[in-house]
Image (cartoon, rainbow, N blue to C red):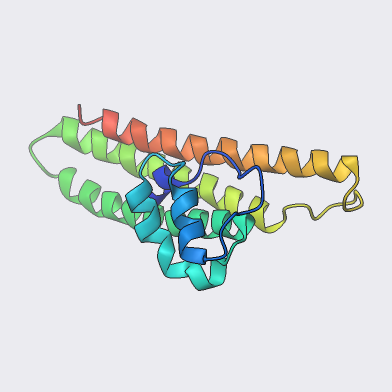
Length: 160
């Protein structure tokens, strides 16, 4: 789920200034909280991403979604064992993590769905209505990904 924390928090304002997909990914990852994790997670997809910021965002969300699925399964497994253990506080924290990661998975799915439909709507392409619609859709994605990150923090807080 670390890739979600590496997801760029803002969309690039201009077209990439590089012609190399690896440099494009590295440059994009510099705007994240964990640039090394971001690059390590996304550079495997350089040939598919090329220099496309929207595709980079879709791949980042997809990779994060896979990680969140794995974390949710891990917490579900740990919770079932902790429920019979001696520490009810740890069992409760693990149940909270399972729940918050389930929420995060849903938010990432919504984000990925929105990114796949980006700009597909009744407004004509290039119109001010279409531009406004894309901004709204990107705002949804940013909100959902931010909520997913908050869920990760909520999980961590349960163990402090």
